[in-house]
Length: 158
Image (cartoon, rainbow, N blue to C red; front, side, top):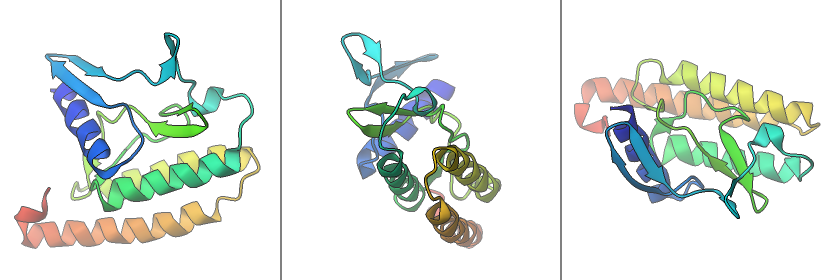
């Protein structure tokens, strides 16, 4: 079940252009996806990255987060520097098996956790994170509005 959910969520990310592994297929508890990395080596997690333009990475992660919520209608639910890998100076979102639809009753709380976790990492790297909290508040409002609408219009549960 989780493998199918991971596959579906990766497909949603691909559809809206969020950098993530491309889903290839799944069977039982195995998800096949593209390898992010090269020469048989996986791309490093954001928290393992040595050096790098953290300000640029922060902007790209925030953009992906905004797209995740506003266009893919998902909240990651466990976004942290462990679930972002960096390859060719570009961040990729991984581990989306626990992601929930924005209509999920816990989506706003999970989004706030995602914002707090990823902002804390960039703050440690001396990157300004005010935009995370501003965008996060806007996205949380959007999630709450979507939740209200989905109660009235179940067809919005997409």
